[in-house]
Length: 356
Image (cartoon, rainbow, N blue to C red; front, side, top):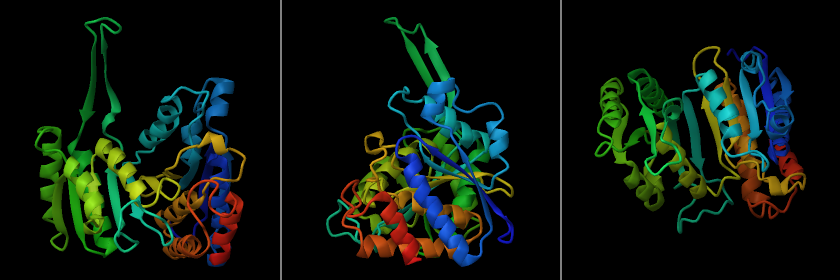
């Protein structure tokens, strides 16, 4: 979108502490919009566990069409203790990812000043890389089923789907992002070509072919198990990682712990095409036991807001938020753990606004 246009943001607070952290993201969005002269419109949607329990429907008819009118979605969290696992995740998260063709899952992995990592001797200069995860294929397509379910002869199948189009558009986006990131200019493909010799061979061949168009980018390859080892031993090696949907889901949780926990980890489900609707969220989940206690960490939701602004073309605003976040984590907060921050959820949001 043009930076002169009005930024239209749908806000889905979701479940548990989701609305609390989303509110702090919006608080910071409003503050930076005033400072940077950004025009915006906000609209709240009550999709989540409570609505599902009341209506039996996760997303009502027309919801996708209505949300498609927005440039971006800011999601707080989904996950309700009275709703069976998978219903909200599939009915909302996966449904919107597929409906809006959000084929890039972007996960910055950055250790902020003042934030503890379990890696001895590592600091903010060592943990600063990005994972680009393909977001619409692999095991998540739902291809498979049961035969003779509930019997001793039961068979269950779940098929991973990879297409040349899906691989290439994700890999190409990762090369472009690596070029723009302007750090080590190293892109590492993470797969398992020695065992998954069909689907991941497609990833390997596509990666090699696209790489020929980017001679300035250093390319590398890791088996996923090796990546898990090296990510812990030498996180400073990585610049940008591109990987499959399933492996990306797993290694980004490991990466989240390296950067200090899910309270500071944010991600984007991105449709990079003109007019595409993208969705940004904190990675920490709904944490229902902290609901309404003003104890939950909003830093990840505020980081997600910065990612939203970057994708919308407001790079300066995004950079100001990220700088403010690091000022707050480095000089104000005692911890990133819920209830141990030294401030309430709302006070942390206020501190970031002040630091802008």
